[in-house]
Amino acid sequence: MRFEFNINFFEKKIYSQNGEDGIIQFIFGKIGITNKFFVEFGVGHGIQCNTRYLRELGWDGLSMDSAFQSKLIKKEIITAENIEKLFKKYEVPKKFDLLSIDIDYNDYWVWKSIVNYSPNIVIIEYNSSHPPNQSKVVPYNPNGFWDRTNFFGASLRALKNLGDSKGYQLIGCDSMGINAFFCKKELAEKIFPEKNIEEIFMPPKYGRIVNGKYQGHPPSDKNFVEI
Image (cartoon, rainbow, N blue to C red; front, side, top):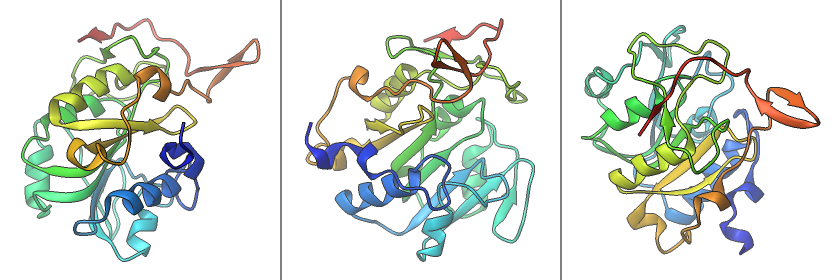
């Protein structure tokens, strides 16, 4: 593997949780920047998130969270039904540089519902308790929330299939097994060689430890949907 194409070598934590700051800088150093505009939802207080550093670098953007608001953070409950209405409300450009999704439950369904806006890079949380050959997602529930078990989000395979259908290439995952990085295919194809999902998948490096191995969050008895 060529060094410059492994995003994990560039992980660096400034304000992000898992080294996403460094990965973001590396990717845009390769593909270039369009308009320095980002959208991130699920930012909490905005102290630790994927786009705070970009804002400090002079980027503009929309930050949203369901439980917190400030001068820079809009308090909004995100659903598949309202996401594009919120983009219109806050005047998000149709084309922009970065979308970061971390709402701990309906991430897959919300991304699927974004059809009239075209970010160059998408960062989205995946459920690494599922191996890369499984395509599973929580059933959509606009009022759904994370119950502290492994019943959340979608497997990496489900997100890759969705990304493929929307014209995105999966280019990597952070080494903690939390976030997946997608790039528009026309930007990625000359820079990031396509790899098998098994090469990209990162297992959980968080949660319970059994026999010296991380297991992720506690298992749930709820049923995922296979797609």
